[in-house]
Amino acid sequence: MELTIRRFEESDERREFPLGWFELIRVAGVTIGRASYEPGWRWSEHVGAALGQASCPVEHVGIVVSGRGARGMGGGGGVGVVAGAGVALAGGAPPRGGG
Image (cartoon, rainbow, N blue to C red; front, side):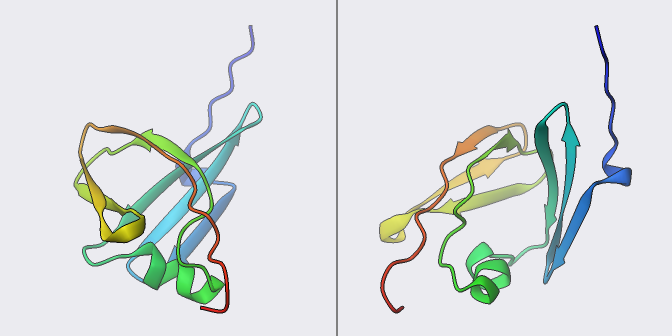
């Protein structure tokens, strides 16, 4: 049996953006991320705008360790999540058209 331990303090990649940051580690062929967001952070404004995308195309599975957040859904709705919640979020479809 092989055991691999990785620490986020020695992440493979760190991405910083307005009001937050995101770190990635790779363990046994799996990529795991850790993020922190300040109040007012929105993916569409603080990450997606620079990429020309309205929603994140990446699937996410994780746990909210502290605080709370929300996931915007198409049509103006949304879902709130709080500390202790396990979440699975399908990636959003890349925007279509010239918008």
